[in-house]
Image 1 (cartoon, rainbow, N blue to C red):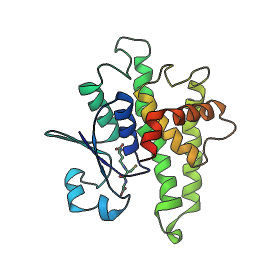
Image 2: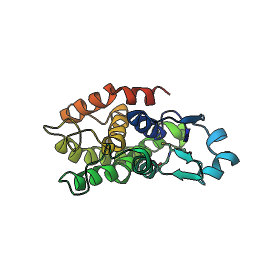
Image 3: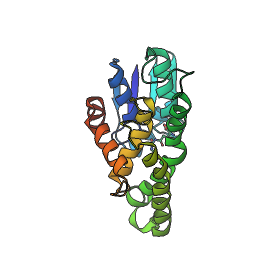
Image 4: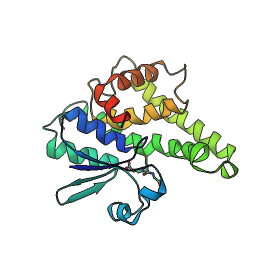
Length: 201
Ligand SMILES: N[C@@H](CCC(=O)N[C@@H](CS)C(=O)NCC(=O)O)C(=O)O
């Protein structure tokens, strides 16, 4: 497998997954910069010039959640996912998809209005709205983590998705003292060796 990757991006989720599963992979490490991501070569892999993209033989697939599911289905040997008929399965699905559906949209806006846009094009009101929305989106996660180490109890791929998003939220200052469960959760995520490998690439 070959992972098309850029540092400090969602591509870290896939490195984290591959490391958790102990799978071998090659890395095409690009700069998080239009010169690499918007090149003709990379746009042939992803029409929007984004990461992650995974190549596996004749397969080329993008969307981090889809890649996580693909890798687990083909190479995961049933790990990192509860059984379909278990009580945890619906919750697993919910948190897996809550990541891109509810938590990442305000994170994207915050990134745009703090880092990506030139200062003269940043908008304080839009930024404030996104920060409030992110706090509201994190509140159910804080509640769900009460008395639990990970989202559904045991570590699962839902933590690779949403755990990565809470790590990003923490970096953006949105995990506050009023969110002690999330604070502890982010620390547990950061302590995982596979996560550390992913984040240092
Ligand atoms: N929903 C997509 C989002 C992909 C995405 O937006 N990736 C970002 C990095 S985290 C990217 O490549 N941004 C480059 C750009 O927007 O030019 C996924 O989960 O893979």
